Amino acid sequence: MVDESIQIDRDAGKKPRQAADKEGNEGEDIISNMPETIICQILSLLPTKDVLRTCVLSKDWEYKWTGIYNIDINDVQRFSHKRTRKTSVVNFVDRIFILSRNASLKRFRLLCQQKYDARRMVTWISAALMRNVEDLEIVYTFEVLETLELRDCKWLKVDFVEINAPSLTEFNVSSNVSEIENCQMKISAAKLVKCAVSGLSLGIFDLSASSVSCASVGFMSYACDLQGIRKNGLHARLLLKGCSGLNHLQLLTDIMEAIDQSKQGPPLPKFNMLKRLEISTRCKIEAFLEFLHSTPYLERLRLNMWDCDDYDYDSFEPIPSCIVSHLSEVEFNGFNGMKPHVHLADFFLKNALELKKMSGLFRKKCEERRGEKNFWARLKKVFGDGNFEVDSEIKNMADFERLFG
Image (cartoon, rainbow, N blue to C red):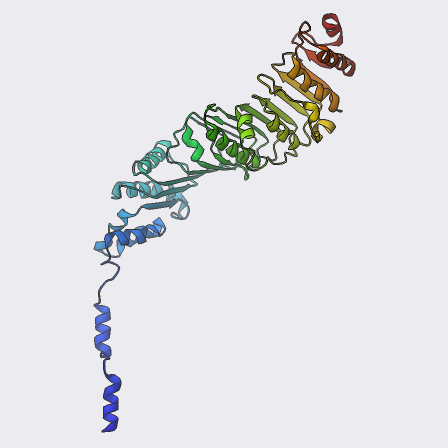
């Protein structure tokens, strides 16, 4: 009797095994009964290629994937058969945008190694933008592309662009819209030689995975937009950070102003390979000095003297090592023969021990003072072999003495 009562107590509250199994098989589908917004949120966190597989689960799940707000396409991972990959990708992406019932997207990421029709690519990107995409990321791989030029592109809501082009040798981008300043662009090109970036704003360029050797950087500023000038100066510094292997650098328009206004940002890298520097913009002295200290092996320097700051160049301390040890050629553009210009030329004449040539000089003999006259005398003494140019007509020492002797 005791044993019976104990057995009854042990089984109290337990369901028969058969009944439990039956309930498990015919139980409620918890996920399917979740609110539609929760299901879409869960699906949006999964890879897109896996999300679309849910359409075969049941008739109810056939179109649940159309409510996702993240689209992530990788044409290699998604399609393994190379022969049919291109057509499959096109049909796949087209189907997503045609059937998608979500009015807005949080992210659209497209990683491409195949070559697609440009109009098709524009259609996909436009479809994402029409859905007010918050994060747009386009990654290309071009196996045979050698020259790429992006001119006046619309950069609305474009956050990140990565271009993989192992054969790319020249890359040019110019923009007359300010939206590019919020776009990050990474260029992976092991054979890249030339790069030119200019416009009303500079994007955030990463060239660290490239081997660019010749670059030109320009930025057209609005004088009243100090914040914009600083921001683009920071972007210019980040761009140059990825170009430390340059041997030729050209600085255009207002880029020196932007570099000068962004002194609190990251310092310029050491350009240990740079031999030639061209400053075709207003020469801001502090930014100019920063470049000289960052180019220890500079040999050729070309300076724009229009609207050049006046400065006590004798106060340079320490004198950049490139001037003392390597600078061999200086060319001036817009040299007017007046005090600020003469003082800068005289600074090079006194300190550049390897200087072999100085060109672009212009002399206003009737307006010069004693200090300027001393410079011309020193110039005549240093370049006894006639390796200097005053005006475009004077090529040698005989012409110099004839006109200015």
